[in-house]
Length: 247
Figure (cartoon, rainbow, N blue to C red):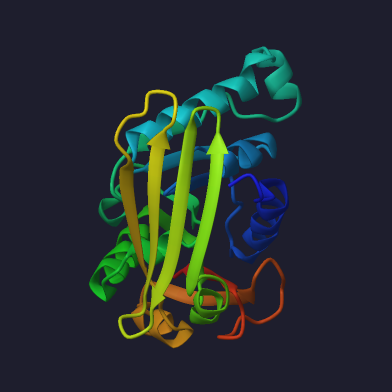
């Protein structure tokens, strides 16, 4: 993920926060937060951040990354630059999200929404987020399009080594099922242990399918944007950001 410009992405997300209505966005939850790259950028920008992920190992990485953000500063310095004192992380499935205090915005990035491989799961996620966001607040998520899968990942191979770990990634698209598959074959070259196989499946929804999943009693579509722009998103986009406003 070293190629991802999280700082630029965070600035785009912050710009989208302007689409909230009657709400000053301050409390932000990232679901499927992974190792916390986006949380760090939002915390630096002064937002009170929360993170949820299913992977405990990734959350440990996120905790270390966020700890480094605060390690060099004391409380007075943090207050002076408007940094929150801590980011709260917890482990859980985004489809079963529940919070005690309503949030101003929830974000779900890097096509994590596409991991809802069944429409009912996606519908359940939208329902859970609607229960967690205050009226006028936002749910911002991006999706990978079929064009992106066919153009870049129809039958894609990648090899890389880092320290004692090497991996081969094979990405391929199953158009008849609308499923994007990413398989990783990971080897510890130092210990020469067995190769570990990790498989990811994502459902590639059309934009119309996503619109059909959105309950108009809960959400208004405040925007549908091409990549990190303000241009309208379409099936010709590689990535589309949806901005839903809680009714």
